[in-house]
Image (tube, rainbow, N blue to C red; front, side, top):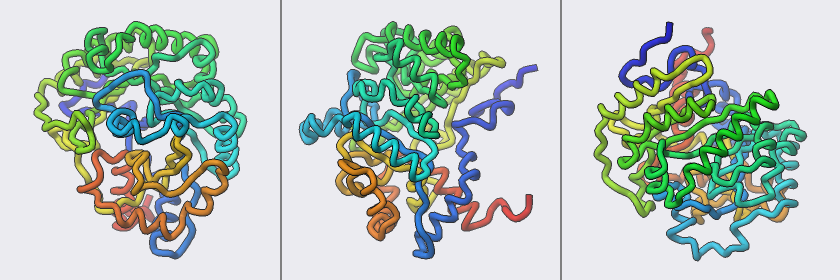
Length: 379
């Protein structure tokens, strides 16, 4: 018998070991300890687990909530067009370097719509040949048959739709492409069945004040399409660098009721994740850690040829670590350097950061490794 959802359920008990559960961070205990030794100048920083690869800083949609809007829209003239695309040779060289360095996964997405750079259209199969896993974060509007076949090499593909109907999609994304995206999502599901791929395909929704009434219909549609996962979480609209920064006033109970209705749709082939643990009970940003210390779990490589300290501070001069272009091996000159350490220590969490992608990992380092809150020497 299916478990009934509780009021603030993020996932049912049968699905608690999932990609969206930040407790997976305890599996990175060796990396956590290495980071702490490096912070104390008692050891070297290990290679990151993941490379976040941004092949372009252009997008074919205009989403007001996008965390890349500060360089896609607001300051777009400050980034020359030539610095918005990563060329194919360099991208392949970068993947080669990451594989040799010991990086385990490459997420293709980030600062714009990655599929606008055709050099990534056959990248997942190459990443697989190099012994790493890949993933795609996309708005789904540019997927074609060739891309769909390549995505079957991925561990997961997340398609950001943020709506369950055409009008809501058009309002949020500034383009009438809902039908195109849904058809492309159906193409992915069909390819998965034909190939026997194990790729997890997710229909993703960010909760905004203007799309709440569309969430349940999006979930129903996601199940009808046949995706494995429906993922919904609050959006961070409070960042001061956002053109749409606003004071939020959600009807929380209404949203929770909608979330519960979504969970009622779950079965053995369809999972619902209503992820809220990175926000306070009113869906506002919260910081449960004191220091920025978990960022080295991932390396952020952007289309402008530079590496930034984390995914939440792309294309920000203050957070630039160094250049991966034209020679990826140059990363070794600044990764784990004194400057890298000093930059992390200098970050003012409450003044400079909105929602932190790896905030729960930072909390685990402080409370599990430093504080030994889980008594790790006692299974």
